Image (cartoon, rainbow, N blue to C red; front, side, top):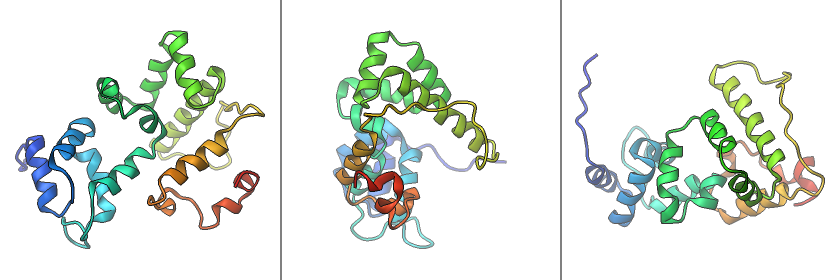
Length: 197
């Protein structure tokens, strides 16, 4: 198969998105494309495209798209500082399993700092990362998740504030449509959230 697309610089990619109707500051767009790359950002831009067109619906702006990207907790917590940029560029290239090994290989003080940023003790944090890695691998291989023993059980301490923190995170991004993340319309009434909502 012959690859016919020509290479575009980050500046050319930014200009292409602007021509297609993305409202933004060009320098900011270039900075973010350097961070997460064109194809990763395109996945978040897809819902804003006009039917049967590469152009975006009128009024689509980078802030809307970036909010969706930033709902990811790791990047919300650590992705704003310039010092963290090299780390996150590396993590963008890692698999979830590689990121888990990266975390497990860190100094204990750094492990504790990261886990406490999520209001978790280190043991609980690692248990969740391992559980998510198992689920991710099952899904990646198109295997059954329903009614299956995972072999890893995530730990949740009684005084854990994860539910409140998740609610606070979702409330911080009111323009992100939760239905696109699989939340049912009455999700706050479900037993999991009812006690904190």
